[in-house]
Length: 239
Image 1 (cartoon, rainbow, N blue to C red):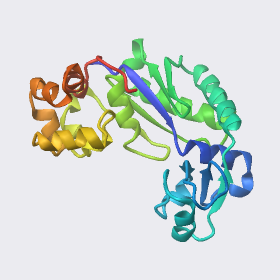
Image 2: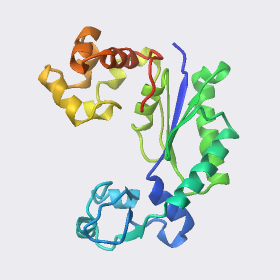
Image 3: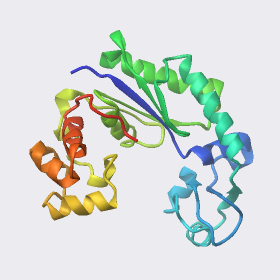
């Protein structure tokens, strides 16, 4: 089964845009918040802040306690939209963007010789260089390459920041066994609880059960799609 999908995740996107626009923030712990109020929560954190445990959803007052000297930046959505378009334009110069899943994540379809691992990896490195040169040095991205969009998204989350991860069909499903259930798109807190109730507590167990079991847990076709997606089949795209 060939490599068919490449997903690009722009790391700590809002915070990275702010660091690109304001050189004095580079290398510093920052969070982006809807407003400068102690009771609000971070909507993005730089990797320097994440080292202190600050992440999306952390209350600003807590962020200050966890990371003395952290810089609070008020969000500016138009900036992030503008950079999104610049990033897509840069990627389009390398490969067509099939779909933008969000402001900080896009999916591309691999065709022809790009489905060969060496060529796909070189394309990923080319995308990174193009972003660096045309958009900015602070806009790092993690890229996942896999037989389908679901697994490519999963791969893009494995190594951050600035990662490049390939999952080939020959590695399935054992390559996924070290992940947590919540690492997989489509498994949130409620679905994790339902899986636990069905005796499925690890990704290894999730990969080993019959598709009828997952169909029952999901309460419909979604479970069968998950079963097929885990095996590299091209059946659905992450939301």
